[in-house]
Image (tube, rainbow over all chains, first blue to last red; front, side):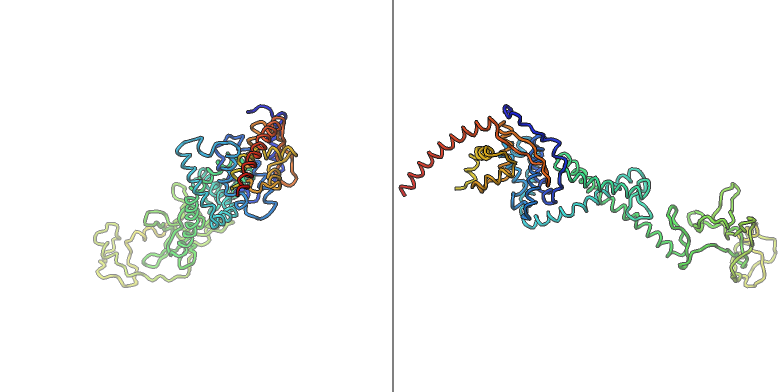
Length: 376
Length: 110
């Protein structure tokens, strides 16, 4: 069979890759459609047939606007006719595998569907939407990379931007993948590339929903945090979030001034929440604020009130500075409960038989009183 | 009678005859066959036939760059192809003669 054909070779390889004009989306889709039906052929046969078809499609689409399908028939039919005329085995008979036959049936069914005008219209739309899918695919793949590289793959500042090193790195990765998609699409007559891209598409499709949901919840969470902090009066910022701070009635709180039951300003009162966590105000470092340390030398953020220092001397400007508040003494209930039993009570002999409504400074037995006066 | 059925048997010799006039690329061969009167010839059939004749050693091929699109693969007939064409032509002409005589008789009786 291979005899003769003197000087018949010609440079059919490599030469066709240069100076190739991009096919119209319709022609590219048609070429891809035929390629699927030639996938089981020998590489050489397949490549030669598809290269000729590509040239053919390019010439046809430069001739007029008539749909390729009406001119050439469905890609599946075209492939079948091509195989028959070329003396190549009909599709799927060579492999004989059940999977191959099933695939063939599915493809044939798709082919039948494709002949319907509505489906042809939808297919044209799908082809036009291809760049959109490229963008989505690039985004999902970048998100996957970000997911592999870092635990929290989403930028908090820019919604839906995956972090690869930085949000900028994520954007760069998306752009690079997009460029690759465009480049690969140009040469998708190579069947191996087509199949590899199909595999990537499957991965991207599978990962699309998790990625969207992850990005959405991350995005939603940071918004929710901001709203939560602002609406809740005594809320503390959750750790690790960018926007911190405590708000009350829509106003941010910069300092807390505790007073005891007798209306005396307290110093260095340490506040804890229901879980025993220190309650700070989530403020950024401020050189004018006095740094409070515990005995181990660790900075303490939850000792109130914060005191301000003169930046030049480092001295607290006014130890008793406080907003102008009047805190009348409370109706104390402690003496009736604590004075008979508490050993820590003052030796004052006056039994507090009545709930002291008098403004007289009956010595308080509450622990807060003992902590008052200790200033640093 | 469906000419596509007839075409199947004679497409090889038709393609060889067209290329015997002048070398051509796939679409060029399709157009020349249609111009000659074989209007029902399918694009895929022609490309497939070219491929098969080339694999069988009846054709040469070479690539010609094109300014406005992908390169074109031209086919030309070689010695073996010419021999095939000569043999097939003889067979076809004899067959056509036979058929013509047969059908002319039938026509005359009508």
